[in-house]
Image 1 (cartoon, rainbow, N blue to C red):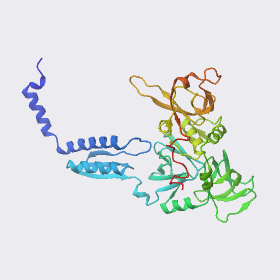
Image 2 (image 1 turned 120 degrees about the vertical axis):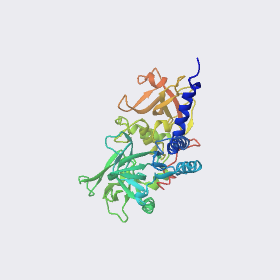
Image 3 (image 1 turned 180 degrees about the horizontal axis):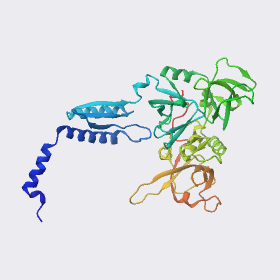
Image 4 (image 1 turned 60 degrees about the horizontal axis):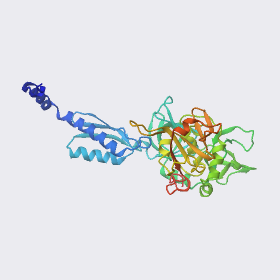
Length: 402
């Protein structure tokens, strides 16, 4: 059968359509292509990088709108558009947004702040941050702040839960006498009397500031919260933050102690605090109390530390190793990490699972009563954090804290 394009009338019609296309329309399509191309080159993980740039027709030329925290992406895009002689208007928001007027840092003022995927209370909870966590403030929108946490995770939280700071104010906080809360949960109270009215609650890992020349009564010390509220805290539950940073160690004893302290804690999607926690939020919290800043999600944590062979299953494992579970690779699909727990020894690991609804212990040994076949069958990876040359950043060396 003859090819339809050999018909001279059809070929002429196609040629006419091509010639009639407006140059502006070609520029728009080229701009969209360049945006997609640069996004795939520069943006590797949308959980820690923002790139929402779009192109639209703008008579004359192309209008670029959106936002990004990757200035090199904008530089590449602009250079390519100029090279292709595309006329464009640059309305891209560079994060942090200049509308913040220099207040591009913040401290969490609530015992636990919920961070969401979009600026709405109905949006999925992405993660949490405890009191005194330093954040980068990237943008403000209708009572919400787009912030980045010390593990680089980016999400939205209500502005009422963040005290915005300038760089100078942030440096002042870092030089202040700070206290880190090491117990499970507690209260900051209005007077040094156990029966007094609470100012705020506080959870494990929360950071507050000791008042200079502060009043002390018994075991209570006068403190200031990140938003300026004052109260009294039981010093027995706290440690000087700088001293803690120097002394804390992510050894197996410390990790196991903090892991079992949270046994029975309820599962909460997006949770990273002792009030509620998900699987990777749990391992992150365990290592946080060992002085290390793990990445937020299981699929990110599996890239940290060093690999451990799975050939002998649990026999080659050490307490503190992270076990990753999920979808086993097929001919069509690769492995996909969906769950993480921490090995505690004797074939057992502790984790917070949605199926159990809480933190608990399971075994990889089929002879044990707490054995679950899924975990043995779907063990994808083992990573060792302790004693490796590729340790996650510590609180002692993290520039947002010290």
